[in-house]
Image (tube, rainbow, N blue to C red; front, side, top):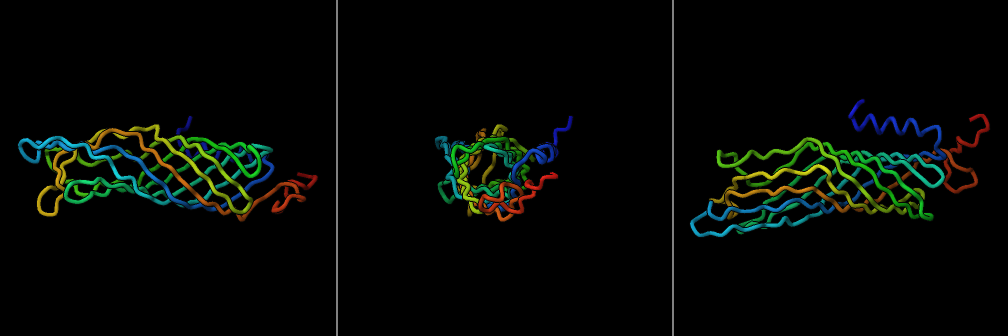
Length: 239
């Protein structure tokens, strides 16, 4: 059995196509607020008697944009998405902050339920394919680990969608099921350094708060009497 998440998404969409009442295609974009692990600074690596200090990451606002497909039934929907996500954080070190950044492609497969129009709730897995992750100011030395990261990870997403037809707004929380292992890094401390030296990026499960706006200009199916029903292809008696 294949483990390719893209194959699973395509299979579920194709299987659901014949049973769907409406199909929607749209674009979306928004902002995210990303949480990562702490940096535990080994004070003794700077000088004798210097205490260890734990630096919590300052969460910063990142962005995302992408496309989605909505397969709608009476009260339920299946919604695969493909999103490009840019994440940002920084560590408030003594001399200057060090930026942490990541870029990834997220493929959520969301299952939703209509509470009452226009309010929907949804949840589902998210498959992430990470193209780049970087911590500003680290040095590749024999005292520490190289800065590495997994190329893929899995998360779970839950949220609320306000769907007004062509336009919608969603609020979601995404929690990483794949933990990021602890790494020991050797930071630049001299000249234009950061005021820390050896330290550990502690293990964590990444999480995000996300707000997105969607535009859904294309809808197929539905009752012709409904506003914005699209082409009404499901109303033909031979289908």
